[in-house]
Image (cartoon, rainbow, N blue to C red; front, side):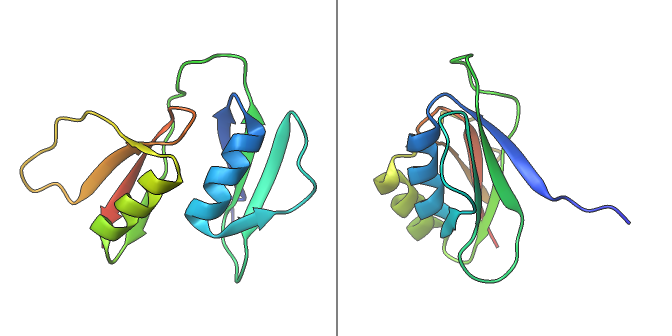
Length: 113
């Protein structure tokens, strides 16, 4: 059996990413933050850890996370208040997701459950 142990997320500013993703996902640091990387884990319960890895390229990487919620509108507003921005996207008519970008410009989706 194999399972996902961690999602590795390329960022240019580890501290800023820790701040944003900790609040966005209700995660906490697994170990003290480093300049080059940090690992976030759920505050309660189990779940996939998020490994924030410092990269030198300013361009967003080809990865994204889908965040599932029962109240997409509220979560999108909350994430924008934390520093996310809306990404311009060509949505299909019955789209159940909103595409945002984290403060580093990495895209992620907020999906209505």
